[in-house]
Image (cartoon, rainbow, N blue to C red; front, side):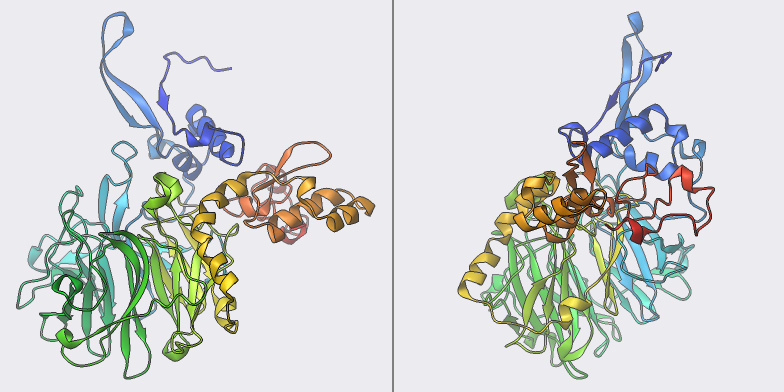
Length: 567
């Protein structure tokens, strides 16, 4: 029973309350966090109240009517809540840069965070963190790992310079002992940035990157790769709210001079059209050959799925030539922008990995955000080079854009991003997945019918989310599976058959099924793996009921194992 002394008014997002289904769990958590914030863990309250607004009255008028009022974040003062972390963690964010350094460290810089009032792009950040592997397991495939964050760094500045500049949607690369940052959007998001800034990774000292000539024009959403062979930082594309950029610039990090790259499409030269929100990576094809690969992005004509390469191995940058690698003779990723890409491996057997993104042609908000991952392998064999879609759906929180991707060995580490409604919370912002199976498979030829089916992926993707939320029923089982379950004398045989079909056979994997004995809707592991253990003893809990109160006083031997709940 709730008896508030003064009534309170809250504004919540419609999606969590609009219809029965998995999203209702988010709605229930939101209501619980509004009513009993002090009884719940800090991270749950922060996640549940993200985007929720509370009406705050600054001055009362006549008849208790507010005279002056405003909306503010509903998240309570963090100091009044019980601490849930023994170590600090960075603010959840999107449009940041996660970079692998020469020593193997992962360094996070900048990005956008939300104050829940002005929207998800209200705050630009200038903090630096180190992302370390989970202490007990190291980096292993996991939908919600517990990494070792170290930070924020206490950085100095050369000659008391006003650096670093808070920014988002910038480009950053590790260049030996330095982190080089270029472009992006200013603190208030109104102005694109130009002048680069440099962080010495050992002394942790920032400085303006003074060059002997003028830097490229100001722009947000550019890309930048680093050539260790030639000690060059290569900048491509971006936009300034007025025009898309199609120029290439190279910073010689020995002479600190900017050089123009090859003529671009706007000048009539052969090459990709101007673009922004694309992804660029450097492929070390051999000890003598380095290429910048560019995939996707937003052009003046909309989202695209083009793949281009630029050989930057030798010669003057203005003499480099673009090659169109868009050969759709097999599976091909749908058009996208604001995605992330990385190179796995070196030499001819290397692979290009692409994760997530968005395509505005599918609508606004979450409808535009893409939930898939692709691998192009092997890069060195143009005849056998093939795109393959990674089977990550239903296991990892894939739906995101404006995120970062780093590959370590055969593992892809994805961090941050925006899911179309909000910045991904702490439990969904980071995951680690393997790419080994896709790169180990031998390329195969694709028939004309197969190519036509692949071309329908972009259309089918929009229906996948709705299909995943439709509960599986007995009628969805094959006649053989249904008959086998009906003959079985084991308890819950039909429920087990439904769960196996929902997770391992359905495309996309289903989030729920209807229990034939009770008529209740049951969450599958495809849904439960996208969030931490809720403590309610779910039938298919992938975490071994780690947060169930009944288990807190039991020994490890007596607790259920996650494998026992696989079904």
